[in-house]
Image (cartoon, rainbow, N blue to C red; front, side, top):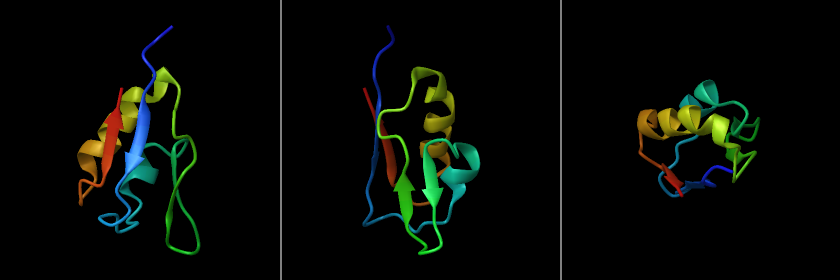
Length: 67
């Protein structure tokens, strides 16, 4: 069993620009109300690469991945 990860978004920093959704749509979604939603707070380990890339590429650095 892999190490569980948790996705944390600082919604005060988040601009809902959907960069993360473009990288990991299984985990992030910007809806019609222009707010970001975390679809999976504890995604499967096989999504780690996408989630970490989304965190790195977030323009506001609002996403963190915790183990």
